[in-house]
Length: 485
Image: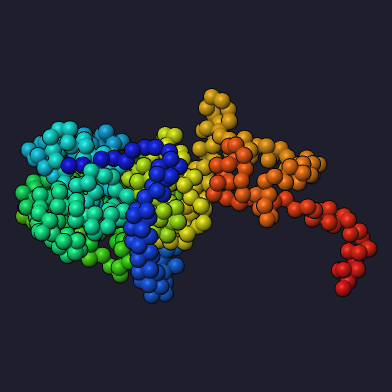
């Protein structure tokens, strides 16, 4: 019962297809607009909001500089409290660890919460191959799982669906009659609760992600809004947490900062309704076996990049998605990754080495709204430009030499602009040749391959006289008289 991993494909092609879906754009516009307004209200009431952002950035920077020491401290703290720590270099190792634990417990079903990291490694499919069913318990995750679709948003995976679509899905997946369920949100939620409750009670193993882990005490934290996380982390006898190594924080003073930043930036709430924290194993209370899997899966490679390293500061609040004009029009599926939007455009290319992932840094207008929204001040536009440059260099290194038609144009422009005489000659030629293309001061159409550019843009027509020509024509005397006046 897996939603399936996103299908890798070039962003431009996927985005063109998504733009044809009018209902998708309506759903996204309504949802992201509502979240933006609420977030602005709750962050605006914080007089020290910018100071909190700076503190979050500083903490993350310090952690990344000493990540090895904090991870070793976390390992020792978890073990001291009865937990078992595993290290996974990649998705295959992490999946094998979870599979062996679940099979060893004799379980044929697991319940999951906060599982975007397990989506990254394809855990559901890996468990399905050994006959284990993984059940998503977050409402939105359950919706996309029942629809056999990948998530389209970090925080609200089913943001691309409206109530009517969810009702139709539940009727089919849960075997209900039309009269048994309306599209009222409370009825939809109640139907999901009934569906999940029996699975909570019979589950022997739960799998979670983690928002944070405190190195000082070995405490793991999950924040959520529905209570499903509390059920997953208390009822089963065995709990397995798969955590990216970047999620570690030094101590509880650092946690204080992030527990203020995260809810306001993600769900536009002053605090999360459910903040579940556990430290190892407590005899007679909650899971009696706890496994913490520390996942690399490309993160140390990101850490080695001085510019791209700040990507690991992300606390998965999704604020950048909700302000991004590109995401708001094409949705998350166009990115072909479990990490969509601006943060996905810089994280995915660093975790994956593929042509498809290399197109993602270009899925941005570079407007800077993502940087302004980020609660830990990740300079996403700067990283996007860094990764664009890296992608171009990779394309140039392939057989054929040229990165693209755009690269050829840029090289030609660099040649012309490097010499004033060439530039002036091109201006004269351009003025003579633009007559059939220019209308009312703009060039709205270009022939051939260039038509792909002008299809959505207008190019200002070249003026009949350049500034330099105007300046030279007026002469020193006339210019001096004008300056005096």
